[in-house]
Amino acid sequence: MSAGKKALIFILIIAAIGGLIFYGVYNARQVEADSGIPRDAVPVQTEYPHKETITSTISAKGTVELIDRTAVFPSTQARIETVHVKESDEVTAGDLIVTYDAESLEALREELADARLALRSSELALESAKTPPGETELLQSETQIKQSEKVIQDIEAEAKSIDVTIAQLNSNMETARKKLEDTTALQALGVSAQAEADSARDALKSLEDQLETTLMQKETALSGLPMAEENVRLARAQYDALKNRLNDPTSLNQIAAQEVSVEQARQRIAKIQEDIDDFKEAEYAPVSGTVLTLDASAGDMASSGRMLMEIADTTEDNLVIRINVPEGDAGSLAEGQTAEIEGAAFGREVYSGRVSRIYPLAEQKQLGNSLETVLTVEIEPNTEMRLRAGYSIEATIVTHVAEDATVVSLMSTLTETDGTYFVYLMKDDYSVEKRPVTLGEYAGVYVQVDGVAETDRVILNPPAALREGAYVKPLNFGAAP
Image (spheres, rainbow, N blue to C red):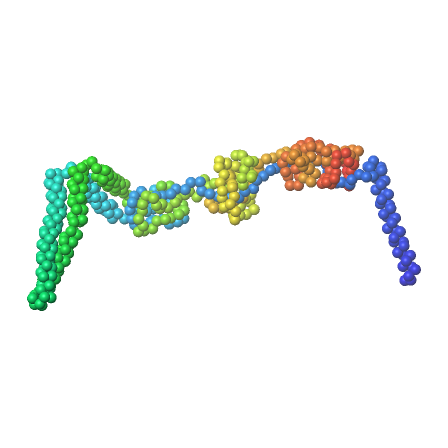
């Protein structure tokens, strides 16, 4: 193809496109002119309100739980000989479930005998504590004082005797020193011999040694004096305590403590006697049902605070559906509201029921990985559901039904700064009216509104700059329903 032909074809195409654009613009202006829409009107989408039945619901998860379960505790304190059931066994009220060792009764009787001996011992101790001191006891205590005082007297007498010896030794030593001095002087003059001086010196040394030994004897004798004085003090204190045995605080406290001991011994006897009187050779099922848990084995010692097993009726009559409703949804709950019940155990089956009980207090529960505040709600099925304790449940509760409600798209509603709502309407002359509305129930992308009629043309998702009194042109033409 030649270059001239290509240029001609290109010009024809451009002319055709220009003609189409001109025709479109002309046609749009002609429509606006024919309908009376101002040329500067803002293009918008519009909708007409319509009627719907809105159903508000709450969905929550829960489980199937037992209403009543019976804990079986021992009726006696004894060693278990045989457990006649195991977990999941079905029992009937009155069935034998546990047998006790008969030797346990004999052990209780022996324990009772020991307790009675202990009581007698405590009573004798109390009686002794309350008995006034006798003449013999006081005389013995006085004798102890005198004996302790006699020890002190003996020590003092011995010390005095030693003092006499020391005085005599000091006198003899003075005489010996004088003799030694005289002998030494005579020796110096050549009158006395050396032997006489040595003899006088030895005599003085002997007296000095005797004095040192005697002083040590006195020190030894006096070292026992503090102990002897302490013994006297203790003996006198013992005498005073004995004489005032029923009046001093220490004795009164001892009497009170002994009275407590006697009372404890009596209570122990009463408890053992009660165990003997209540002793049973066996336990029997208090109710009919299934053994849920078992915490008893042959050889175990049964006691009042230890549970043996749990028994419960696992039929639907003793089952309840409990769901956990988040606190944010709890305000719309009411007893009697209808519910749909689903669960993995039921496949695609959906059952109907009603809210039978709303617990008065909310509580915190671990749901999944988070701790949530929930309100427990019980759902009662309208028909038999083949329930089992532990099944997972999801319930949808109908909290409100708004019939014949006027609804608009959520994108049509706007919020004032004070929290109230409004919509923009397109009037017949294409001007904008601002209409206050009240929102009601929500239904997907729609919301119930009061303040508009089905014949009102509501502006959908209005531009942010749109204001009352402005003009709009609808991009979707159509008549009111």
